[in-house]
Length: 135
Image (tube, rainbow, N blue to C red; front, side, top):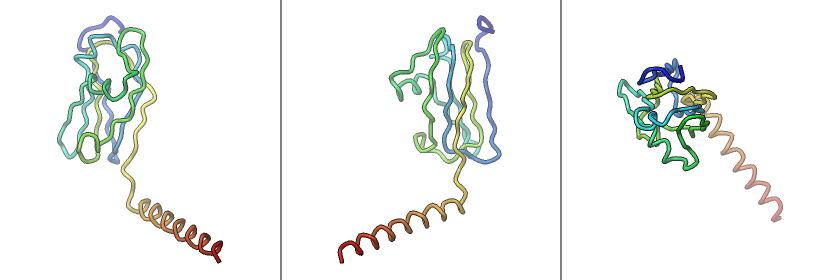
């Protein structure tokens, strides 16, 4: 409801696999939302609140207000100095909507092994080719 009650409500996302980043598009957030809206992330049972005003300082092109559309750059757990997140809640002080939610799960240990071994293999291959050309 574009002219509904204040606060307007929240969107809650619970993840079965922890995530390390979360971003979204936000549409038509009224001016009052700048003050009363926030993103809450939960890591290990501890909730960290990030006001929308903080999200605005990360990207100078973001402006909240009636008839606006903004992409919120993915917030990372490293930025907040927290562990991976199990839950994210977007709280809106005024009317608005969200779209294009993006998030990154914590890499599985086996994925890291493949990534590291592939990178090391490429380095050795490049060194070997470089040495061959020098001969």
